[in-house]
Length: 100
Image (cartoon, rainbow, N blue to C red; front, side, top):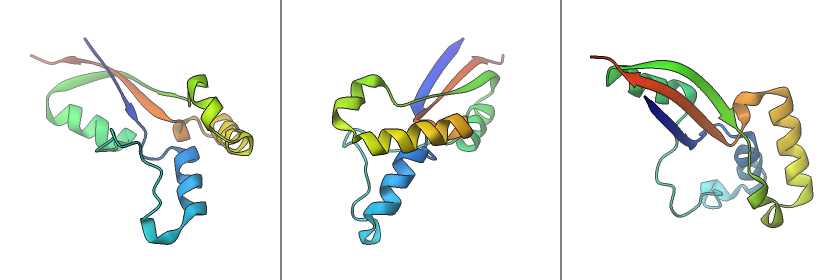
């Protein structure tokens, strides 16, 4: 079994921030440790190509450890988006297993 977590490329919180910042992409809200983003489709496609059977895919929201650094109105937008559309949450969790 493999449990994989990663940042969601289509995180509503990040996309809203990015849209509001503008500046031709130069103000993208990316943590310096993040060098790639995956979505449901790209992650499940990659795992299928590498012969992993996917048991489940879920999404996780922005953690409370980020709240002190996130403006209240941004958290409200995030919470509303994730409540309506869970696939816009901060990250993706995939449970899978290698296929012999």
